[in-house]
Length: 98
Image (cartoon, rainbow, N blue to C red; front, side, top):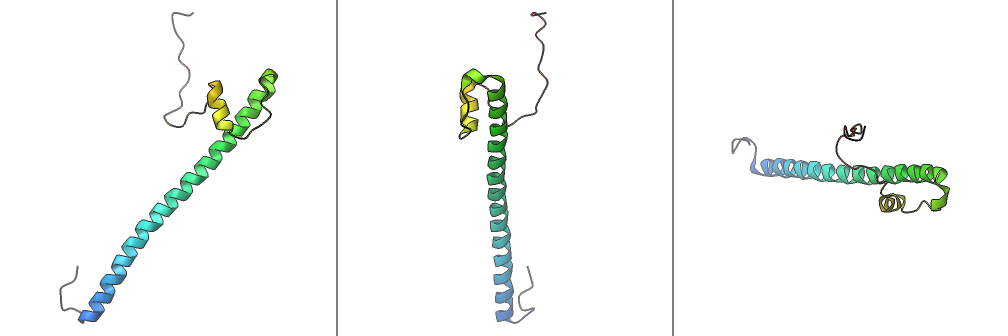
C-alpha cells in the first residue's frame, strides 16, 4: 500500500482503518442493492402472474379463478407458469404433424 514511515504511525493506522471501512461498506452496499433488486423482481413477477390469471379467467370462465393471491402458484398448477430463465423463443413446428 504505502511505504512504511511516509506518514506518522497513527495517521497511517487511521488511513488503513478508513480504507478497510470503505471496502467493507462497498461490499455491504452491493449485497443490499442485490437483495433489493431481487425483492423488486419478485413483486413484478407476482404482478405479471396476476395479469396472466386475469386473462386466463376471462377466457376460461369454468376454471373459477376469482382469487389472484398466489397467482404464480395457481398458474403453475394449471401448467401455465411463467418462464423464469432462458431466452424466449418462438414455438417450433413439428414437421411430422403437418
